[in-house]
Image 1 (tube, rainbow, N blue to C red):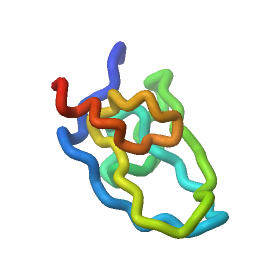
Image 2 (cartoon, rainbow, N blue to C red):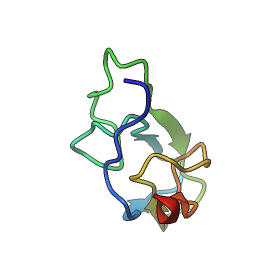
Image 3 (cartoon, rainbow, N blue to C red):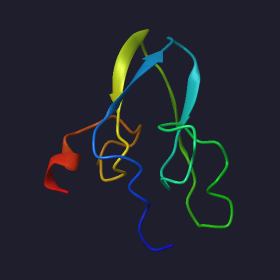
Length: 80
C-alpha cells in the first residue's frame, strides 16, 4: 500500500482524557476510526501514539493527509 486509505473526508470528534495514550490510525484501514485497531499489520504503516495533554474534545483526521503527528485535523481534507 503506497498511500493510506482515505477513511473519511471530514474530521471526527474524539473525547480525550488527560494523561491517557491514544494510537491514531495512519493507514486508514481501522474499523475503529480515528484510532488504530491493528489493521495496519503487514502494510508498512504504524499508528501514531500520543498522550493527551488535557481532557478535551479533539477533532481527529480521517482523510490521513494531516501534517499533525498526533492525527489532529489540520483542514487537509478540504483539498481532497
